[in-house]
Length: 237
Image (cartoon, rainbow, N blue to C red; front, side, top):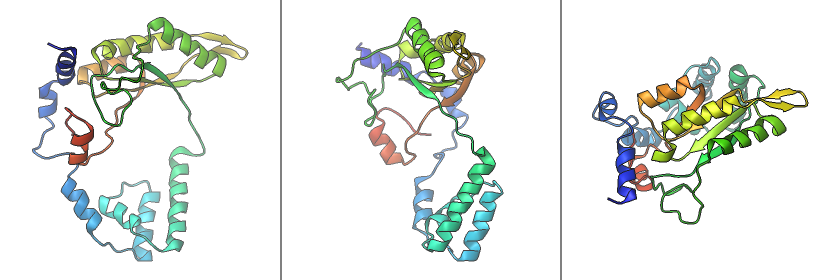
């Protein structure tokens, strides 16, 4: 059996079928037909109706997809200004003027997938494949936390048996263990976010116990045909 076949078999079994079945309803999470029919409708963009939607957003209430498309169809420039002002108000209410930065640490570009847009894809022969050792992760963290002063990181890993949850958990422990002396005291990482592939509930629990910050998994499109085209051998939710 080839490595590609073995790795594909591994990735297909990362999440148990029982964890998928209990969320299946016979239809996709987001319906292509619903999106297309909503976008093709003409909605009421009168000032009064638009301002009602903006007021709802300023009260930090979730907008319906019809309300979102209504705002997308607004052509009155004066209402655009009100939309900008509402967006700024919502931003300040939720985040104030706070900006949080984090540094990336690319731990492994090994990947069993072949997503068309991604540099990690398995058919890309132009990159050097690398998985950082714990010593290398420790040294990079010393630079990021000590010399540069970062407090938050995002670790990036491709989907591969050699960089699965055990590797990620060990890397989190390694990163959090770094206490680097600086001019102003001790440099350390307070929060490690992880950008990785979908995982099982058990694996996610392991990441939580290891002190993960935020878990990021991206689905670049919910359009079924587009998803199937750019994500070979993957299924969307």
